[in-house]
Length: 303
Image (cartoon, rainbow, N blue to C red):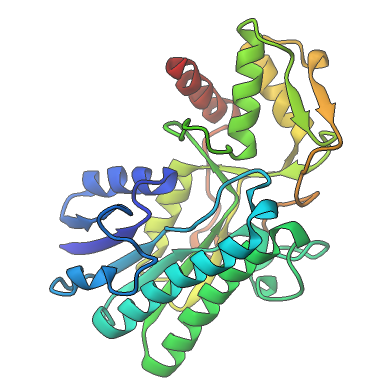
Protein backbone atom coordinates (compact mmCIF):
# COMPACT_ATOMS: atom_id res chain seq x y z
CA UNK A 1 0.00 0.00 0.00
CA UNK A 2 1.35 3.42 -1.00
CA UNK A 3 0.95 6.42 1.29
CA UNK A 4 0.57 9.86 -0.27
CA UNK A 5 0.81 13.27 1.37
CA UNK A 6 -0.68 15.93 -0.91
CA UNK A 7 -0.42 19.70 -0.59
CA UNK A 8 -2.81 21.88 -2.53
CA UNK A 9 -5.44 19.16 -2.47
CA UNK A 10 -8.31 21.65 -2.57
CA UNK A 11 -7.12 23.15 -5.87
CA UNK A 12 -8.20 22.14 -9.37
CA UNK A 13 -5.39 19.63 -9.97
CA UNK A 14 -5.40 18.45 -6.36
CA UNK A 15 -9.10 17.57 -6.35
CA UNK A 16 -8.75 15.55 -9.55
CA UNK A 17 -5.64 13.79 -8.23
CA UNK A 18 -7.34 12.81 -4.97
CA UNK A 19 -10.35 11.42 -6.83
CA UNK A 20 -8.12 9.41 -9.16
CA UNK A 21 -5.91 7.98 -6.40
CA UNK A 22 -8.98 7.08 -4.32
CA UNK A 23 -10.14 4.84 -7.17
CA UNK A 24 -6.79 3.09 -7.49
CA UNK A 25 -7.07 1.18 -4.23
CA UNK A 26 -4.21 0.13 -1.95
CA UNK A 27 -3.49 3.79 -1.21
CA UNK A 28 -3.66 5.99 1.86
CA UNK A 29 -4.22 9.69 1.20
CA UNK A 30 -3.48 12.61 3.52
CA UNK A 31 -4.43 15.98 2.04
CA UNK A 32 -4.90 18.76 4.59
CA UNK A 33 -6.23 22.11 3.40
CA UNK A 34 -4.76 25.52 4.20
CA UNK A 35 -7.03 25.93 7.23
CA UNK A 36 -5.71 22.82 8.95
CA UNK A 37 -2.14 23.09 7.62
CA UNK A 38 -0.89 26.59 6.83
CA UNK A 39 2.22 25.97 4.75
CA UNK A 40 3.38 29.54 5.35
CA UNK A 41 4.10 28.44 8.94
CA UNK A 42 7.30 26.41 9.36
CA UNK A 43 5.90 24.00 11.98
CA UNK A 44 2.54 23.35 10.35
CA UNK A 45 3.69 20.05 8.84
CA UNK A 46 5.00 18.62 12.12
CA UNK A 47 1.55 17.30 12.94
CA UNK A 48 2.15 14.65 10.27
CA UNK A 49 5.58 13.50 11.46
CA UNK A 50 4.28 10.25 12.94
CA UNK A 51 3.31 8.91 9.50
CA UNK A 52 5.78 7.59 6.96
CA UNK A 53 4.88 8.53 3.40
CA UNK A 54 5.98 7.03 0.11
CA UNK A 55 5.18 10.16 -1.89
CA UNK A 56 4.86 13.84 -1.06
CA UNK A 57 2.97 15.42 -3.93
CA UNK A 58 3.45 19.17 -3.64
CA UNK A 59 0.82 21.11 -5.60
CA UNK A 60 0.29 24.13 -3.35
CA UNK A 61 1.25 27.54 -4.73
CA UNK A 62 0.20 31.12 -4.12
CA UNK A 63 -0.91 32.30 -7.54
CA UNK A 64 -3.82 32.93 -9.87
CA UNK A 65 -4.32 33.20 -13.61
CA UNK A 66 -4.62 36.33 -15.73
CA UNK A 67 -2.58 39.37 -14.72
CA UNK A 68 -2.26 38.25 -11.09
CA UNK A 69 1.51 37.70 -11.45
CA UNK A 70 1.87 41.18 -12.87
CA UNK A 71 0.16 42.75 -9.85
CA UNK A 72 1.65 40.64 -7.02
CA UNK A 73 5.31 39.88 -7.80
CA UNK A 74 6.60 40.63 -4.31
CA UNK A 75 3.94 38.66 -2.47
CA UNK A 76 4.38 35.76 -4.89
CA UNK A 77 8.08 35.67 -4.18
CA UNK A 78 7.72 35.74 -0.39
CA UNK A 79 4.74 33.41 -0.03
CA UNK A 80 5.85 30.78 -2.54
CA UNK A 81 9.40 30.76 -1.23
CA UNK A 82 8.06 30.25 2.31
CA UNK A 83 5.73 27.45 1.20
CA UNK A 84 8.38 25.66 -0.85
CA UNK A 85 11.11 26.01 1.76
CA UNK A 86 8.86 24.63 4.49
CA UNK A 87 7.91 21.63 2.36
CA UNK A 88 11.54 20.97 1.39
CA UNK A 89 12.70 21.21 5.00
CA UNK A 90 9.97 18.87 6.22
CA UNK A 91 10.85 16.40 3.46
CA UNK A 92 14.52 16.41 4.49
CA UNK A 93 14.06 16.31 8.25
CA UNK A 94 10.99 14.12 8.65
CA UNK A 95 10.20 12.25 5.40
CA UNK A 96 13.53 11.52 3.69
CA UNK A 97 12.29 8.12 2.50
CA UNK A 98 9.52 9.76 0.44
CA UNK A 99 9.85 10.76 -3.18
CA UNK A 100 8.95 14.42 -3.59
CA UNK A 101 6.75 15.05 -6.63
CA UNK A 102 6.10 18.67 -7.56
CA UNK A 103 4.81 20.85 -10.36
CA UNK A 104 6.96 23.10 -12.47
CA UNK A 105 5.51 25.74 -14.74
CA UNK A 106 5.82 26.50 -18.44
CA UNK A 107 6.22 30.15 -17.30
CA UNK A 108 9.79 29.29 -16.29
CA UNK A 109 10.91 28.80 -19.86
CA UNK A 110 12.46 31.88 -21.46
CA UNK A 111 10.85 33.25 -24.60
CA UNK A 112 12.55 32.62 -27.91
CA UNK A 113 13.94 29.14 -27.17
CA UNK A 114 12.64 25.63 -27.70
CA UNK A 115 10.94 24.63 -24.46
CA UNK A 116 12.92 21.46 -23.84
CA UNK A 117 13.62 20.40 -20.28
CA UNK A 118 17.32 21.28 -20.64
CA UNK A 119 16.29 24.93 -21.05
CA UNK A 120 14.12 25.09 -17.93
CA UNK A 121 16.75 26.89 -15.84
CA UNK A 122 18.29 28.84 -18.74
CA UNK A 123 17.76 32.50 -19.60
CA UNK A 124 15.09 34.82 -18.22
CA UNK A 125 11.38 34.03 -17.99
CA UNK A 126 8.80 36.45 -19.39
CA UNK A 127 9.17 39.69 -17.42
CA UNK A 128 5.57 39.85 -16.19
CA UNK A 129 5.77 36.25 -14.90
CA UNK A 130 9.35 36.48 -13.66
CA UNK A 131 8.82 36.36 -9.90
CA UNK A 132 6.46 33.38 -9.90
CA UNK A 133 8.53 31.55 -12.52
CA UNK A 134 11.70 32.00 -10.49
CA UNK A 135 10.08 30.56 -7.35
CA UNK A 136 9.32 27.44 -9.39
CA UNK A 137 12.91 27.34 -10.60
CA UNK A 138 14.11 27.73 -7.03
CA UNK A 139 11.91 24.83 -5.95
CA UNK A 140 13.67 22.64 -8.50
CA UNK A 141 17.10 23.92 -7.45
CA UNK A 142 16.23 23.21 -3.81
CA UNK A 143 15.18 19.65 -4.60
CA UNK A 144 18.33 19.13 -6.65
CA UNK A 145 20.51 20.40 -3.80
CA UNK A 146 18.88 18.13 -1.21
CA UNK A 147 19.09 15.19 -3.57
CA UNK A 148 22.77 15.84 -4.21
CA UNK A 149 23.76 16.26 -0.57
CA UNK A 150 21.41 13.85 1.19
CA UNK A 151 20.42 11.30 -1.45
CA UNK A 152 16.73 12.23 -1.49
CA UNK A 153 14.63 11.43 -4.57
CA UNK A 154 12.30 13.73 -6.46
CA UNK A 155 10.63 14.21 -9.81
CA UNK A 156 8.91 17.21 -11.33
CA UNK A 157 6.32 17.62 -14.07
CA UNK A 158 5.83 20.69 -16.23
CA UNK A 159 2.34 20.76 -17.71
CA UNK A 160 0.81 22.86 -20.41
CA UNK A 161 -2.32 24.70 -19.25
CA UNK A 162 -4.56 22.14 -17.56
CA UNK A 163 -8.26 22.00 -18.32
CA UNK A 164 -11.23 19.81 -17.47
CA UNK A 165 -14.47 20.00 -15.52
CA UNK A 166 -14.94 21.05 -11.89
CA UNK A 167 -12.84 24.21 -12.18
CA UNK A 168 -13.29 27.03 -9.66
CA UNK A 169 -15.93 29.72 -10.23
CA UNK A 170 -15.51 31.80 -7.10
CA UNK A 171 -14.40 35.17 -8.44
CA UNK A 172 -10.72 34.36 -8.93
CA UNK A 173 -9.28 34.93 -12.38
CA UNK A 174 -9.56 31.88 -14.62
CA UNK A 175 -6.92 30.35 -16.86
CA UNK A 176 -7.43 31.45 -20.42
CA UNK A 177 -9.29 28.39 -21.70
CA UNK A 178 -11.94 28.60 -18.97
CA UNK A 179 -12.24 32.34 -19.49
CA UNK A 180 -12.85 31.76 -23.22
CA UNK A 181 -15.54 29.18 -22.46
CA UNK A 182 -17.23 31.44 -19.89
CA UNK A 183 -17.35 34.46 -22.17
CA UNK A 184 -18.48 32.60 -25.28
CA UNK A 185 -21.10 30.49 -23.47
CA UNK A 186 -22.51 33.63 -21.82
CA UNK A 187 -22.67 35.34 -25.20
CA UNK A 188 -24.31 32.33 -26.88
CA UNK A 189 -26.92 32.30 -24.13
CA UNK A 190 -27.94 35.87 -24.93
CA UNK A 191 -25.24 37.94 -23.23
CA UNK A 192 -23.02 40.65 -24.64
CA UNK A 193 -20.47 39.75 -27.34
CA UNK A 194 -17.29 38.36 -25.79
CA UNK A 195 -14.27 40.59 -25.30
CA UNK A 196 -11.02 38.62 -25.39
CA UNK A 197 -7.61 39.85 -24.26
CA UNK A 198 -4.98 40.54 -26.90
CA UNK A 199 -5.22 40.25 -30.67
CA UNK A 200 -6.01 36.54 -30.64
CA UNK A 201 -2.72 35.49 -32.22
CA UNK A 202 -0.95 34.39 -29.03
CA UNK A 203 -0.34 30.63 -29.09
CA UNK A 204 -1.24 28.32 -26.23
CA UNK A 205 -1.44 24.62 -25.54
CA UNK A 206 -3.80 22.71 -23.25
CA UNK A 207 -3.71 19.25 -21.72
CA UNK A 208 -6.72 17.62 -20.12
CA UNK A 209 -6.27 17.08 -16.39
CA UNK A 210 -7.15 13.38 -16.71
CA UNK A 211 -4.50 12.88 -19.39
CA UNK A 212 -1.95 14.76 -17.30
CA UNK A 213 -2.62 12.64 -14.21
CA UNK A 214 -2.56 9.38 -16.15
CA UNK A 215 0.90 10.24 -17.48
CA UNK A 216 2.14 11.52 -14.12
CA UNK A 217 1.09 8.37 -12.29
CA UNK A 218 2.82 6.21 -14.90
CA UNK A 219 6.08 8.07 -14.42
CA UNK A 220 6.36 8.93 -10.71
CA UNK A 221 7.69 5.52 -9.77
CA UNK A 222 10.52 5.49 -12.30
CA UNK A 223 11.42 9.13 -12.97
CA UNK A 224 14.30 9.90 -10.62
CA UNK A 225 15.72 13.34 -9.85
CA UNK A 226 14.54 14.72 -13.13
CA UNK A 227 11.88 16.87 -14.80
CA UNK A 228 9.63 16.19 -17.78
CA UNK A 229 7.20 18.25 -19.83
CA UNK A 230 3.63 17.03 -20.21
CA UNK A 231 2.35 19.00 -23.20
CA UNK A 232 -0.85 19.04 -25.17
CA UNK A 233 -0.98 17.47 -28.61
CA UNK A 234 -0.46 20.81 -30.39
CA UNK A 235 -0.62 24.56 -29.93
CA UNK A 236 -3.48 26.76 -31.11
CA UNK A 237 -3.91 30.50 -31.34
CA UNK A 238 -6.50 32.08 -29.07
CA UNK A 239 -8.59 32.74 -32.18
CA UNK A 240 -8.46 29.05 -33.07
CA UNK A 241 -9.53 28.04 -29.55
CA UNK A 242 -12.32 30.62 -29.71
CA UNK A 243 -13.50 29.31 -33.07
CA UNK A 244 -13.69 25.74 -31.76
CA UNK A 245 -15.70 26.87 -28.73
CA UNK A 246 -17.97 29.00 -30.93
CA UNK A 247 -18.63 26.02 -33.16
CA UNK A 248 -19.55 23.87 -30.15
CA UNK A 249 -21.81 26.64 -28.82
CA UNK A 250 -23.24 27.49 -32.26
CA UNK A 251 -22.10 31.10 -31.86
CA UNK A 252 -20.82 33.38 -34.62
CA UNK A 253 -17.06 33.96 -34.02
CA UNK A 254 -17.16 37.19 -36.05
CA UNK A 255 -18.99 38.79 -33.11
CA UNK A 256 -15.95 38.38 -30.83
CA UNK A 257 -14.11 41.58 -29.96
CA UNK A 258 -10.37 41.61 -29.22
CA UNK A 259 -8.84 44.11 -26.81
CA UNK A 260 -5.17 44.65 -27.64
CA UNK A 261 -4.71 46.89 -24.59
CA UNK A 262 -5.08 43.92 -22.24
CA UNK A 263 -2.30 41.79 -20.76
CA UNK A 264 -1.53 38.56 -22.63
CA UNK A 265 1.70 37.25 -21.08
CA UNK A 266 3.98 35.21 -23.35
CA UNK A 267 3.17 35.40 -27.07
CA UNK A 268 3.93 31.74 -27.71
CA UNK A 269 3.87 28.97 -25.13
CA UNK A 270 4.09 25.31 -26.11
CA UNK A 271 6.22 22.52 -24.69
CA UNK A 272 8.61 20.12 -26.39
CA UNK A 273 7.35 16.53 -26.20
CA UNK A 274 10.40 14.54 -27.32
CA UNK A 275 11.46 13.59 -23.80
CA UNK A 276 7.98 12.39 -22.85
CA UNK A 277 7.71 10.29 -26.01
CA UNK A 278 11.13 8.83 -25.20
CA UNK A 279 9.88 7.82 -21.75
CA UNK A 280 6.44 6.41 -22.54
CA UNK A 281 6.18 6.24 -26.33
CA UNK A 282 3.52 7.93 -28.42
CA UNK A 283 0.53 8.85 -26.33
CA UNK A 284 -3.08 9.75 -26.98
CA UNK A 285 -5.04 12.55 -25.39
CA UNK A 286 -8.70 13.44 -25.24
CA UNK A 287 -9.70 15.20 -28.46
CA UNK A 288 -9.89 18.92 -27.95
CA UNK A 289 -13.55 19.11 -29.03
CA UNK A 290 -14.47 16.44 -26.50
CA UNK A 291 -12.53 18.08 -23.70
CA UNK A 292 -13.93 21.53 -24.42
CA UNK A 293 -17.47 20.12 -24.61
CA UNK A 294 -16.94 18.86 -21.06
CA UNK A 295 -16.14 22.27 -19.66
CA UNK A 296 -18.90 23.93 -21.68
CA UNK A 297 -21.35 21.51 -20.05
CA UNK A 298 -19.73 22.05 -16.63
CA UNK A 299 -20.04 25.82 -16.91
CA UNK A 300 -23.62 25.70 -18.14
CA UNK A 301 -24.56 23.49 -15.21
CA UNK A 302 -23.25 26.19 -12.85
CA UNK A 303 -25.43 28.91 -14.36
